[in-house]
Length: 171
Image (cartoon, rainbow, N blue to C red; front, side, top):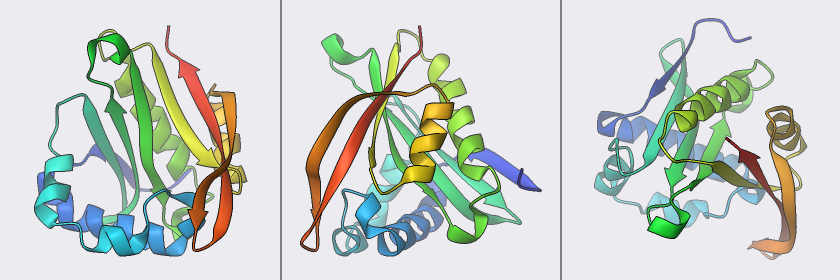
């Protein structure tokens, strides 16, 4: 496990650091995300800060090590009445130098603990590109089960990328 690791809810004041880490992830692992780095680069910081605003069925966690933000994960709940029992995991990223230390697992465990506290939330879903085998193993270890496979879910710079869709039953 990572030494001196702090997992906490990110807030609007963290927008600059979150933006920088998210952009680094999109640049470093373009085949892992549905957002292209060039699109995200022009995202207004005010919009990033609004995304980090607590509430609206959303929580964004950060992992800090030595005062540096080294990982993130977010949970976004569906707000419409017929689907508000579901939430999706997004923006999962751990810096390369922090990988293999349990940072991603600690982020996910804390996120799921918070999800279990949300009244009426019954399932958590996520999508992972099939090239992200370490992430897929982590999600399965946490109890996620595959419910679908999507061929060519993404086309990244001309490269087709498949995704697996997973869900975790919280009931």
